[in-house]
Length: 140
Image (tube, rainbow, N blue to C red; front, side, top):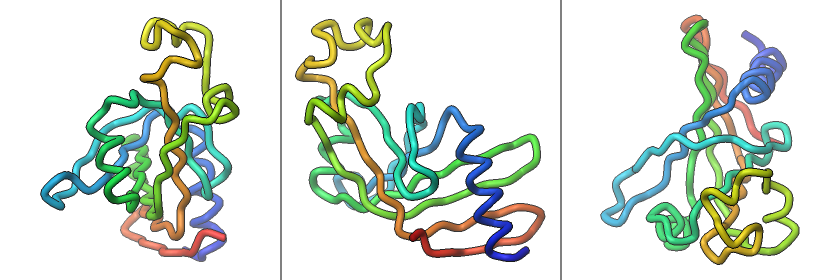
């Protein structure tokens, strides 16, 4: 498979995914994986998540911003791993970007709830897998 095809299929996978698996480095340096809803993305370069400020994941990201995000479609057995760095954001613009009606059930004080935060992942490279083929490519 050519790099251009892998990138095209990777974009399709991200577009069609509602959930991604977020990998961060835990307290003792061991990887920890968590399924996360994907509320927004900018192609393959940036993936946005919302989370609780008080979560264990936020503490891990503050200590070590290196992370990976994995998308999978089990129906056709394809996957995409993106590797890069995660940012912890609480600015009003980022919060409003991901806020949806109904989020009050998780954050009762609304978009300004102190326990509502945003994570922005910036990918540096990706690896697409399908049909026994792996293609690694930089994210530009």
